[in-house]
Image 1 (cartoon, helix red, strand yellow):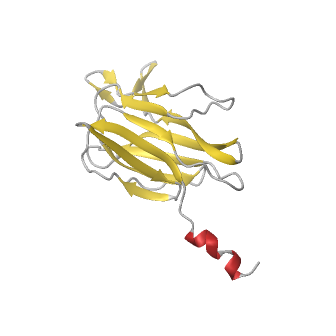
Image 2 (cartoon, rainbow, N blue to C red):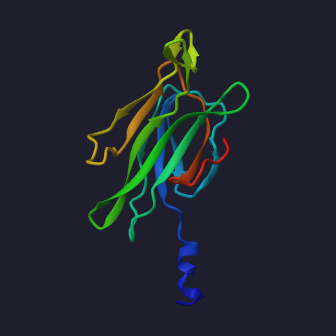
Image 3 (spheres, one colour):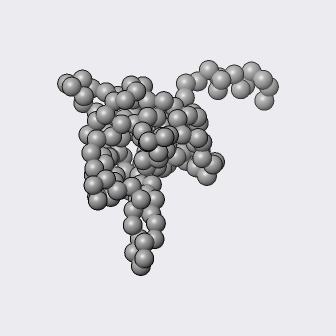
Amino acid sequence: MGLLGFLPNLWSSTPTLLVLQHVYQGQDLNWTVAAQSGIYQAPVAGLTVSAWTVTPGNPVSGPQPPDRVVRFYVAGRVKPKLLCLVDVRYFPQGNAWVPYYRMDEHMYFTRRGDRWMPLTLMNGVPALVTATPIGFANAAGYYQGFSFAQTTGPIALTGWTVARENAGALPAP
């Protein structure tokens, strides 16, 4: 295939992996997370919300797209800290591939005596991330979407990274 055979791929738009949604002061917020690997800043700096909802991105035609991992970061004392990981895998639906999601919380623990204790405590309560799925999981354990929140209070996302699964971690945004 000659050079011209590759040109349509250069002009095609990057598919959307997922959309983060929240209603803030009566306004619908929709932040698009593209399938392009990289580091992304939150569109609105310092925005603090009670929860985010992950809704499906674009279906993709052609061969199955590679798995992606989206790492969400929140403000930390010195630098952004990892809140959670969202694994994105495409599953067949009709003549297209549709993204499905699985969230993995990122918690740090330490051993104190004979017990494991979470390092991220606020007023003695572990800062856990809860996920409420939309619909039922498929056979592989992935959902069409979900909402996530912190048990200790609102979330102030600073940004996210997108990478192919097992491609290594990018620095925090």
